[in-house]
Length: 435
Image 1 (spheres, rainbow, N blue to C red):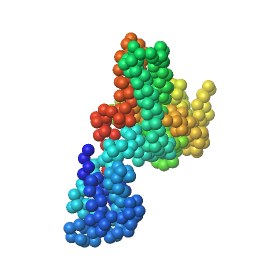
Image 2: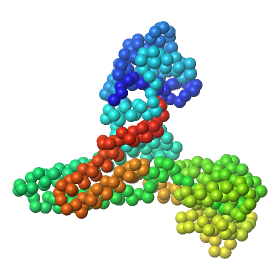
Image 3: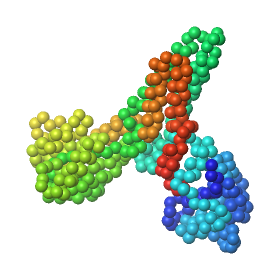
Image 4: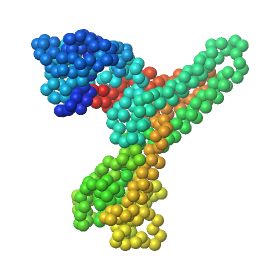
């Protein structure tokens, strides 16, 4: 592993009251000592005058902290410089660090080193990346659980049980002629079936964890002038989409992010559905249909002052929300079972918002559960299940042992215990430079 000293700005770029530079790697203590005139006590903030190691020019008066490895975030000798946040100060200290032999860190390199030094597993590293990117309380809670080891504990428990089963199976093979319990081999098969069932239950979550991490999309469909853009603006509380009495004003998909019950939801306002010869509007309608097909939820909008639109009705399905807008201009037609709202007066909007929140939470799951958060987790668990299924029908104990080893390897790829070189760049590429 490369132990070159690395540094990066851990706080936001630009002018600020305080800027934090992180330093980690072999020789970090010597570098800190050169700039700060000696090492402070470990994990104790110390006010020091920072000087350039070559010119002795004063760069800043700053708080410095020293974290000897392995008791640090990365597991290496590390330090922090809490500087005045002016760009010139940060640039001056960064140049001084380069002069001492440190280099700028790559994205995610601090956390990558923490992983390689055994300070955290790959799921915890992914949880930290998700925590940095979290937009809502629900995402934050899920990321904190994962960063705290919830997934690692769950998968580690399964791996431990598989390891015990493998040991029993190997004992059956190695000491077949010895006086072993007659049902030892059958007990391994039975316990493996129970494990397979637990993993299958974990997988049957409807993709709620991934949806919470990535967010849901609600596509708003309706005829021209049904008030889709007005409804979008009313729901988000600002002028996000252009509103006009002229039909066909919305040509492209307008997307706005919203927090509903801790779930990140993207509302997508689309072009009105109708037959038209306008090439640009035709393309807008094509995009509207495509967005509707990709969406997690449809919001079908009709207008109380217009007949029910046939093109919009064609998109009706059991999980679609149906809304009659412009309730201030007319009542619902006979048999209409949707929500009555008025984007203009605000009538019914709170009911609609509550219903959208209910649907979002139902699809993204309870944030009190330990949920899958990435497709690579799902693929590895499906592979483990496949091998545990193979074990059930394997005619020889040697084949059952090999199936257990393969299932263990699949679980190990999730936490980073085996065969993860190909995914490390992807995982740590999600981080900002200073993490």
